[in-house]
Image (cartoon, rainbow, N blue to C red; front, side):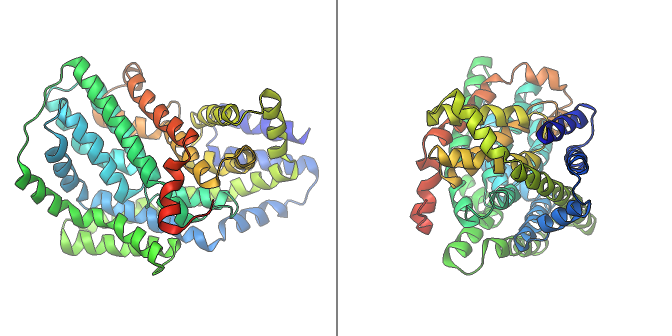
Length: 430
């Protein structure tokens, strides 16, 4: 009965339009009151969930991404991408994919990525005669690479939701190859649509210009190398790397590029504070929900239910992907990770999947939800920039969905994509 109350109240609040964080908290409160447990349990679980040292990485990574977004780094990355691949058919579309991948590496946030790249690339593509739906779809899907990059705060959330079963350093190394796979899939989709619609190719500016734009963008791109090198060498921990990222970004935008202004700095700080507050609230209320799910053995119940469908690992993994996709259509990425990881990680591990590999599956699948209504945050931002309705974009979204799903299947069924680099660079034994 308790599980029915927990599930019914949670989905009921969501249907009524209550924000996810409050829906989680209210459903947990309803269940605790029904159980007759002390109300103090609510606050104890919230505080224990948020009072974790490793969570310091979240505000730092968020702040670093906002500084990159408001500090003029995007323009240099866009120029490098245009010079590299702009001469291919549908050149601006290809440039958009590469630029989103590169900026995702320094921002670690799909929303920041689509905001920065979309503001530059979508108007540029429209001016050059590309259809708006194509420009928006390319930008919003390619920006999802940011969720897999070393600066991604969602990796930190997953590592802590996994309950200490996975190393943050291993996750950071594991994300690089899936990010490359996702970029290649997006390039294929962008090129295929460009050929079908007859979009033109640009002109190659020559290698000297490519090298000049690379030199200009290199200081911004170095943030990924600094984080990886520092963690692998043991100079700083994964948590400390976030503070290093902020320090480097401030030095970069104020003293190297000299593109940061005081109003933009304050704007970046305010947005980082707001985002951190939202994430920590989600973490607190999700800890309450995780406590109840552990109390009522939800993971065991879900595992038994899935085993009745099939005992084949590939079927179990497919079912997990489908469930995560459905949940991701109406829940934010952080909420999905916090709620679903304690349920599905034990099931996936029992079926033979490594927790690092499951983290990559979780991040890509939840990122897919960012581009799916009704809660598709990156899609809403891209449509707002492009001045086009979500419905118009959805009508031509399938090639890009197919690319995302292809990348997801590669990561789900080929463990080497997620585990090769952690084993090579860190001696990971998973």
